[in-house]
Length: 233
Image (tube, rainbow, N blue to C red; front, top):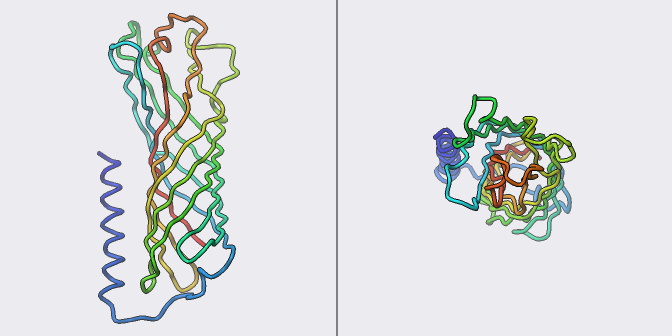
């Protein structure tokens, strides 16, 4: 529900900006040569919300994922290809926390709950497809692939869930897709955007016990998330 509210508020705000541009008679362009640069640089910050997608081997009670908001911050390098297409590299730091509740495991809460605090070094390489600039705004869609290194994965930890340690892989590849708006302000370009991030590989490190109640029934575990970013160039 909270994720939907964030999306609704973003769309309302973005719609108001577009409407204002169309209804005003003012046609002065802010930094009209900005997009003619071969290279441009910037930074971004924002919030994220991660989930897991599970594929199970047997039909048993699902693992419930409690999602939390995290933050992301990073740098931007943008290479202009033509008027409508840009190549973007956005290295950054992403933090998020998720809690897993195993509904079919007996015992107390310590046995049924696993808390996952993830800190990712994130490297997206994206293509940005833009429309023609309209006054001082320009809508765009963005898509591409990314790689992340999870600093909190516990992959090399010799302890597993029998000792209370849930383990994930260090390295993960994703595909990303999203949309946003470039707003040309007097001194800089401001670009709010929403992006979906979806893992391409299995991130679960299985327990040593092949019959482990925590990992034996999981065929594939993949992260998926939504990013709300605010970029300044």
